[in-house]
Image (cartoon, rainbow, N blue to C red; front, side, top):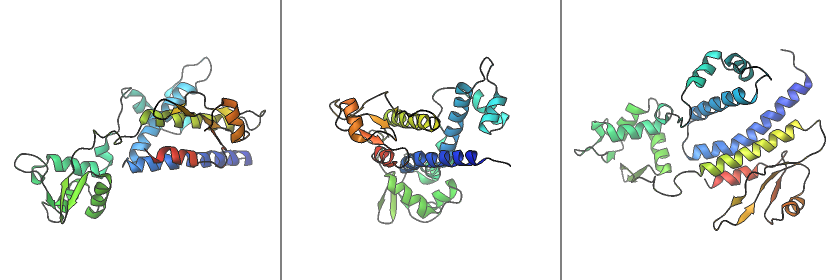
Length: 264
């Protein structure tokens, strides 16, 4: 394949930007035990949706063939995703995540439940213990690795050589990530990156994410996300009249994303 130097440079820039955005996002997903296959499915869905809605040829209806050309996916795969019901699509965690299958088996399989049908306390080893449970429901995963991850997430508790399912933590306010804030902030940041990359050959400008104010308790405005390689933090603070604004240099600063997601 013949490629120009400019094409190679553009791809390298895009891949560095993608890695910078994905690193803190992957850290967040792994913290919540979200499997790679889930990320792949969601990325495919969004990729096709964006290609379908944002990249039509003027005056012509968008087609699955054009989306396949844009995305590199097959027409069959594009058609499958487009034909799926819209709204509320959730990745099947039991299909991709071993610990979900193990917990489901623990809750439903009579071999691992007590007389009342509740998950019983399991010994570490044995065919009817935790090792047998993992062997039955997680395919080739070592029992120790599954145990360590379930303990890390707080899904189970250990008492000596026995394991039990922990009380539900779903009611805890910090048990789930703040999806609305995460989606909004990440969208603002990537829109600014996209604008900055597209303006390299044009006149100087600054990409600002203007859609919202991040707020702490008490509804006090504390920060607006600004993505720029030409404004200093002091200049952006003066621009918006706020004291805690931070300018992000798109070439070097990925710490904002890390700090934003680390508490989720």
